[in-house]
Amino acid sequence: MLDVLKFNKPEPPKKQAIGKGRIKIKDVSITFGQGPSAHRAVETTSIDIEAGEFVCILGPSGCGKSTLLNAIAGYTKPTTGKVTVDDIEVKGPGPDRGMVFQQYSLLPWKTVYENVAFGPKMSGATRTEAGSVANTFLGLVGLKKFGNRYPAELSGGMQQRVGIARALANYPSVLLMDEPFGALDAQTRLMMQESLLDIWRNFGTTVVFVTHDVDEAVFLADRVLIMSAAPGRIIEDVRVKLERPRTTDMASSPKYLEARQFCLDTIRSESRKAFAEQNK
Image: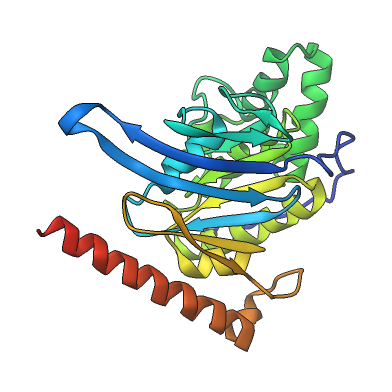
């Protein structure tokens, strides 16, 4: 069944993230293991992401995109350098950073409403406060009437929308997304991209979005950061000059095609390097 998005246009959240969410990655490298078996996943790299920007990270398979995202999330500690959010060093996961994974990672024994209310409750909100937050964000993603359903009763696209609502329920200044639409069919994926842009405009949070899909990156992002073949580092910072709000008919515009072709050429070059290295 086609997963049609219907938005109720709820009141915007009271705690806007506007002005917060500036990310600084300074001289970060990440190595797993030690000695001869050590694997350098991310080469020394630096980048600044401004508050409220929508940034996509592209790169060949295995280049360290998710590893770099996990360093921002606080799940992975840099071997050298540091990551800061609003000038505070990231030393572990925190409520200022919401995470959405490719796998939906919802709690299957809890209802949709309970999944979204769980984070605020763990952060000290009362049952009433957590319920109000859950209803607000379920309305934001168009799923308020599905609050009593369980994850298994929802389509993949709907489950991912619950995941986005849950990630936003702690009012993070940064939303981190690791190929969140990769498991969806093409039509649902396109609708999810459009709905994410609606949510981003409403909420004002910084978004860092990892994807392997060039079209997705160009359609969504203010900037596309392209990583080299492993060990990964940022080699290109592409500013997408498409107007907002974005519409699907922009895919035929010269600005879109120019950015898309540049990204494709860069990724293709890096993928060839990775292939050659693997076959030495």
